[in-house]
Image (tube, rainbow, N blue to C red; front, side, top):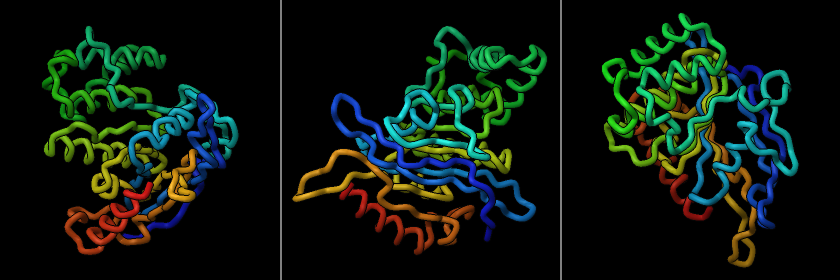
Length: 270
């Protein structure tokens, strides 16, 4: 299915960061463009793919406004600088309050966001239904499976609607059934609104390809057989242009499998 390119929703330009004297990011640049399909609500899912320790989470924290880059800029729609709190962030360790139930965690997020009590309850109910958590409303995080905690953490971040949601390794440690559910949920949340954008940090090549319309590979250069500190975008793959986006069962197609092998081979060099 074809799409047309809309406005720039996120512009990351020449972002660099050094920590403890070590270069972590070296001029990372990419844009996220609004994907527009006729008669179909289509959000954006962009994967930042790379091995552990390459700086993916550091970049995500900069996008969220939690850390400042040493150089470069991050701007949202209409060139507006992103402010801390305007971006949803699902951390890898699912920061749910252990002494609060699924419902209580969601309603607290709504109150912190300044929502009216009635609106908070209504939205929490709607999200629990959407994320298949209604039957677990009175369960505590320790009573949930990994996939359920992940879904609760996502719901928590969109209690206050945000059009940019960052997710740090959302597919890590999930069994195949939970992985499929979370992957499907990522796409579903993105497609709630045309301007919704989800940026996923992961090292899971196949799942990144399945859920994303764009895949960026973060890696470092090599010189004389040695790794040069500082990650940047080494490769980018437009899954829409390749005809591999928005297709059920796309992972079974020959084109998908060939690209997966190509990405896997390059991944070893990052």
